[in-house]
Image 1 (cartoon, rainbow, N blue to C red):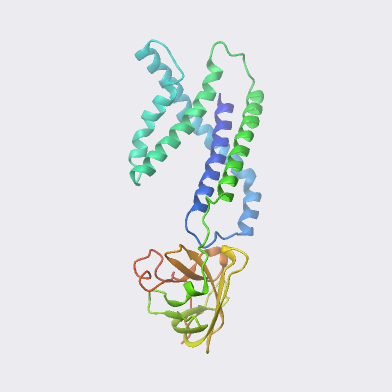
Image 2: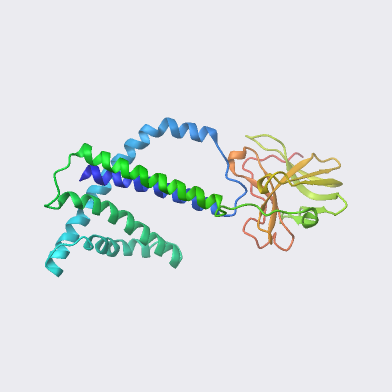
Length: 304
């Protein structure tokens, strides 16, 4: 039972992590950073993570799954005169209702959390429960582990396939496709800096910040001057670039994200993997939007 419970919990954890990753892809974002060092560390730490996961799975099995089976069986005999499988999800749903209700979230997120926890706990308990049925042949721990690995692998492959089809079919976020006419106009950083792009290719910067390529200690400059700009549509929504050059200012290549109604221009600050951005939006959106002001740069130096 312990082997079955830990194995099923592991499979559910993998599918849950995949679901979270897909959900992150649906939110408006400037492109999730890829950190090869983090991937390398994850590979190196994989054995330790596997051991820690097995210990956590064992604790959850002993502390939640097995008490759930005992409680569901007792309730079935006490209230209905016999034990039945559906007492397991009913008991799990009742026990998990309070933690879900206490979560700091809206009604729908709390309902989704409750359903997810109930499903995960119930499936694990029902797999372990099959080993207790009197008409079931005795199964060794190794055989049970092999079965869970087989069916778990099929479940993970199915989940990955569905996630890939969903993202390929348009479930994932993509930046809006803009044109030169849509880019022309005034852009603001919400802190007094403005960038005016005109349809004839003229760019006028007033107090717009630029950042030197220093991953550890970015240096901030304020750019004011007149120059030119050019839009490169690239070969897809993620490849769009707006190159702006102004007098006494370095050439800055802006990228695009946001929505068609609320587009945003941005440059990455310092280490691209840090996720720090400097944003420009339309003036009427730069104050009210959540990412209206430029993000702070820890340790950034502004030259005198």
